Image (cartoon, rainbow, N blue to C red; front, top):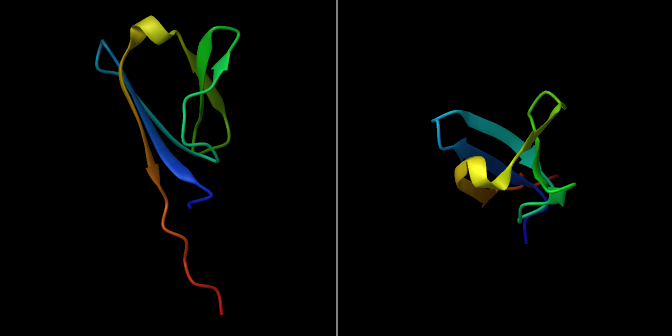
Length: 64
């Protein structure tokens, strides 16, 4: 099973947020979805503003 997931959240207005997280399901924090961005920052979105949210496993590279 993957340890990291690419997450992509699209709001109803078309704004898209992307990041990498160590979870395969959305997390609610104080009623908002928490999205970890690639630069380490976090974005919090109201669930009723989202039209789509996806989590895709990141393939781990073989370590020698």
